Amino acid sequence: MKEKIFTNETDEAVLEQINSKIMKHTIQFLKIENGKPKPYGSGVFAKIYNDYFIITASHVASFFEDHPNEDLKIKVSNNFFIPVLGEVKYSIIEKSEPIDLAYIKLDKQTTFNLSKAYIPVTIEKFRHHNNLLNGTNYCVLGYPAINVTKEEKPFNTGATFFLGSPPTNDKPYQLYKFNKRDHMILNVKGKGTNVNTNKRDKIIPQFHGISGCGLWLLLIYDNPVTGKTEVDYRLVGIMTEFRTGKYFCVIANRIWLIIEAFKVAEKFTFKEKFIKKGFVA
Image (cartoon, rainbow, N blue to C red):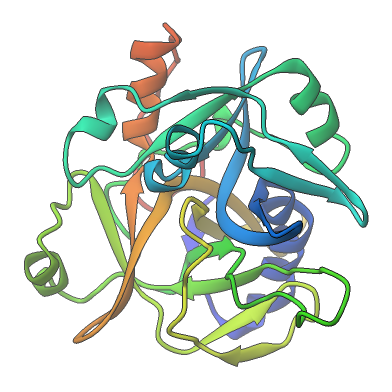
């Protein structure tokens, strides 16, 4: 099935996958300050074989090292917050600047509680994506820190997604000193969409809080069996930074780095296959 470029006509199918699938893979970390939850970062809930993980940015996961007597929490229902319990692993990937990746290998109780509200992404949805599509086929979904209720109201929060496209040349990589082997840079000018309301708002410069969320490739194609335009998705990166200077963009570490970390630290083996450019897999 051949991939298509994102168009306004595919809005409904794209929103369905984001709201019912990608949203369910994405968690928000909360820290407790003065007895109240505060947004701290985002992450991707994943299952590899029989183990469960949260993949995130290392500068988010470093909270556990910097605050050994405190917990990060995840909201799983209106009034139920669970502590994130497990083993944080930076592996060798965190030692190589500017790689900013880590994962938490979750314990059974955290996995049990988390699975009531979230759905783990599995390995077949991971994709080492070299040849970027020249279109708005990339979704960044996370929890900006500004998406919280005001102090006097009960705590609530919400996710926002941004659709991005690759830069037309390598100048952003050169300016910000990121290599294309390990990183993906995407332009995100335009509007972000609040997942709760499906309303599109002007892109905000405050991306704080979405670090550690997934970068997702949206696969848009005509299904010859159904005769309909359909949408699938793959996890291709983890969002780590943003820039709002000369180029308004987000920066992600490519997902192959975390796959290699799993191979080394967890001794996982994966059956990998080559995907012909322009085709869904």
